[in-house]
Image 1 (cartoon, rainbow, N blue to C red):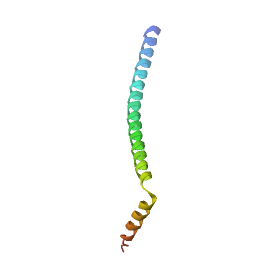
Image 2: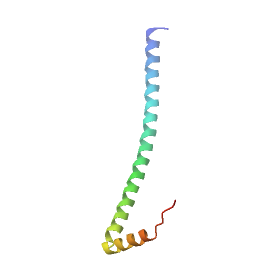
Image 3: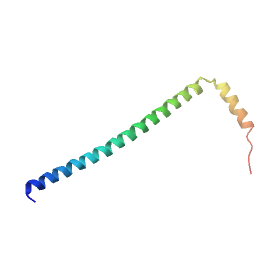
Length: 76
């Protein structure tokens, strides 16, 4: 095999390696984008819950806590 053919094969091999790496990166980007969406949704849900809890007057929270504590039983 002459030098020209060897260089061509090396370049083609490198191109194939780059394509494979690009596909792997595309997959990782897609997976991370989905994870980011899920985290963003969870954050928004928690913000909504915080808003709801913050709007409940403190007196009601204390009364609800006291009522829940009164109904607790200790299991042996």
